[in-house]
Length: 541
Image (cartoon, rainbow, N blue to C red; front, side):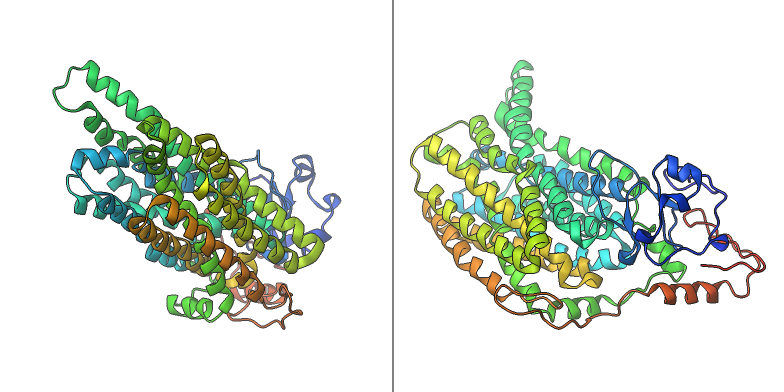
């Protein structure tokens, strides 16, 4: 067998032309597999996959998506893609928020006002609004692997140039460019939605996004509490005549930017777009359809559920982005703490991503088991309502201990609401997951822009209060979500219809394969696709 890119194909005498497989993977028992597949607990792939077997149990009716999430596995393609998805998102967020714990130092060095600092923060989150929409469409067209790598590389370069900024305009433009990093959230969610079935997608999406979001919290500690004092000590020891604090913040961001650019290579080289291989090869072989971007957008925007979820996501992810930008400044101003201590405390908000978003997605999946889509929507409403309540509590607490406790509590429900939202997204229109995820993700950044304007014009406590009040109001929109084929919160099951052409059925796939091989005695596809051999009298599946 030809080697698989980034790995070795499982050696086997099994050929597609020699065996006819049942329609669904669940119909295949281990006793029907070759002995070495049984020994390695491998699971047979569909006829059009570049892999012969998978390490995960899959559902062939959902394009060989995995029905399980073995977190400690790096096997291709499912778990390799899962880990690359959240790592890409993590490093992008690390770069995106690397400057936030240093904003007070930047403000002092460049003599900027509070309004100018918040203007730069608005540009920082606005940069991802358009890029998220575009990345969603590009994922549907070209797959998440290349789009993730491109976004990571593009944001890494300006991050390394942070130290060259000297004006407020320059700072805003720089953060606008780095904001492209936010589009990696869409690629992350698309990637995991492609690799896992809808029944477990809530947990998979939430875990990957939560661990990726953790990059924002790590940035507070790594850059604000570790790299900043470390470089400041180096410059002081070197006896520099310039301000060590200014030299330090101008140097810190080189590290996260460099990590992003280097990791780009590994994303491209060692991962796959979907369970069956890479999109470009499958499109060349006629195994995938490629529609126009406008058709993707039109179909996604014609569904009112897309708009509702985008607005709601603006009140969870938008709240997270705004709080990440504001937390260190808030604690330093309200409680008169140092830059290092403020950054360390603010990082507690991001650290909740380690489990809170995954918990939100998991509980959404559990609710689906017991009450279907109605259960998911109930959990969605609860998360948003409690998030808003605790944001208001945070705005009214006067003690440092109380503020930290309230911050971590409302962070728990912020991440839970994010996980719940993307437990619902894969159901909206499975054929347009990337485009829909991009639009909803852009809604998160749009919410951050609106809330950042609020923080620019009002005091911190007043801004937090109104942000919490808006979140409570938005929670009621869960009552209006009504997805085709599923129940609403108070509505009966909606009739099913399709916005886009559904995937080929098993019988249609067989007919297409027979047509492609009708006049060929022997065809070997390239090294990214399994060899297909036609033999006299055999049935080509």
